[in-house]
Length: 390
Image 1: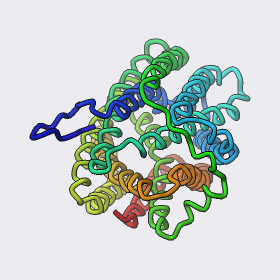
Image 2 (image 1 turned 30 degrees about the vertical axis):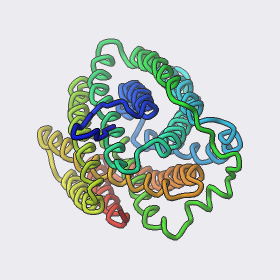
Image 3 (image 1 turned 120 degrees about the horizontal axis):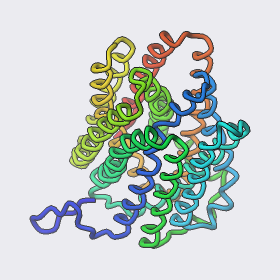
């Protein structure tokens, strides 16, 4: 978070203690999650699962999310944002511990995605509720940039650390260490005041909120974000690992991309606050689309790493600027909590509709053709951000 006081720019001024505490909590959760999440597709692959089954695991996770959130609305409206974020922590710990036991308990393949969906649901709903009401409207892009940069900086160390932990102790111990870090994230949650969800919140109101005419362009870009994100978090890390087959090297290169993305995120936020948000989205989405298209043809580890780092720069600038638009919409809404839940449902419904396409392609195509085709699809999906208004 940044604030101007007189002529001095206090980069970490801690004048908004509420949002600073949120940053600390998010950073700790990001470290714990970052150690493991990027390795989950690799972990499933190392267990001998084919591509289609790895994609099925993530399909189940995003499919569970929609009904879980819809049925949780009566419960959520009785909670505060702080408690909602807190609930994500035991769910995430259960998810990590369960992953360690997956090899010996096959039924967990269908149960763990539900725990993963619950942890995502509680964290993102609670986070968006708190951030949307705490962020400074005049410096929205910068604060979003800072928030996302902190997440990426926390992630920056995490993949390399995860690679070292997995190489040294194995996946099981790495899952337990991440769980311990998650427990530490409870501490900063004590230092910001709670905000209650509207007691009048209903599913009908939530669904109506995302059907508004003025949000149609935003929803189109949201579909691109959800669908392209499925390729980014599942297939691209797996493709990179197959080119390296070394946990530490893979983690180090993932970390390098995240650091580059963190810098791009903060710079993009400052540019967006000067009124150049739409231009930033257009340029970064076009750049990201070109990177995805190029990945269908490039070969060799060095070219892949260069593509990974440049891709993270474009994608991070694009997502952070687009997220600024999302929070700007929330500031204008009479019922922002309904919009937050509506966007969450729409995002995961879009992803749940798209992943079966990837599963079908994994069945139909050999691996050497599957990845180039998927990267070309990701390139087209990224261009949907051009329809977002800013």
